[in-house]
Image 1 (cartoon, one colour):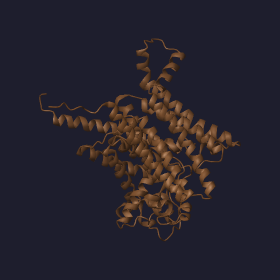
Image 2 (cartoon, one colour):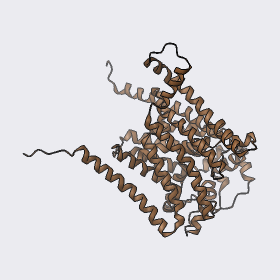
Image 3 (tube, one colour):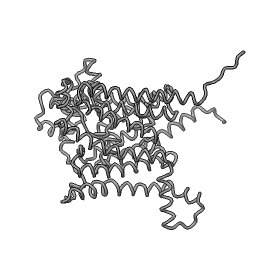
Image 4 (cartoon, one colour):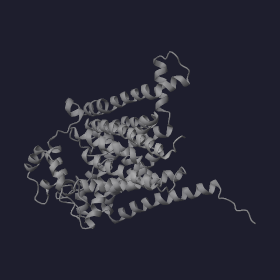
Length: 479
């Protein structure tokens, strides 16, 4: 019999490189083809290619806030949390420069307890999924079907939640209902029969949205952006968190490994630097994410000015794609790295095709719309995050189609639903309500981050209890 030769590692690598090139080429074809139809589609391509960069960076650094919280509280590993703080510092500095240049697209979120509650629900849920909102996207790009289930359940949970009414209205405080009724909303919206509508119109809209730079009233825009928004709201808190992580989770091991008994300031600084540089890939990912996220604001604002629009809804109308816009002829268009809202739009569009009326609420009907996924540039960004992650995973030989067990699939769906609810209560996710918010001087981001961390801690405790309980039930007595 002839011996069968197994494929060589070099041949496998060549196939992966070819597959990565095909994926990247597909996105390039979309950009070139749409630009050839109308050059204003460059606005769509800008979202697409920034998403591609985010996807590559997230996968390269295994960058995930769920992993950061789980690793800290479950096994005491600070690598991911350190990488996130690096990204926060860099994004804040680039954002400050963009703001000073008059190119920022950021809008502050209202400050209130809802951020903590939404963050806690989101953080609790993401422990069970094994990935945050952005982490689930990049893991889908690696071939994880469980991560795809998270993305889908998160998306549809949002779409159903924002249209929730009926029995849920019994939970609406009288003050919310009265405040919402006083807003004189358009007749096409069923605000009085929607829990989430009354939450938005009767509570969120009555809260104040500020940035630290604006509160401190700096006369100089440079001081407001760099000192107030970047230094005070992002850099110093991030450094404080890094110092806490070092003292609680890294210092003891560092001093033991280096056999230091009486550490001085120089040793402590060396230990801190060692912690920051412990994972080269995570540090590089944080660097790229921070810089790219800031630059995206500059690019999107520049394109808006070049095309003479303030929102993609105006651009969609000009391109002949008015269907699916909100009552205000707008569509979701943050202008920076964002996750979850555009995915809720996609789920809402699917439900509308199935005959459901999902536009009689504030979230879809008044604010974000449900444009077709084919002409939703922000949804293009989510898809390209998956594509960019797939390319990087293929190049690193880390792509593998992985199907979950029934139990893992159920956890993914359950956690995704909680993440979707938390994202809507918290008006964003780990990206929109924390990362992009904190780095642009908005203190509400730290409230969401506090809730997300607390919810993640509870999730780790619950999950550990569940595993121990399951193992005890499966282990025969006497063993």
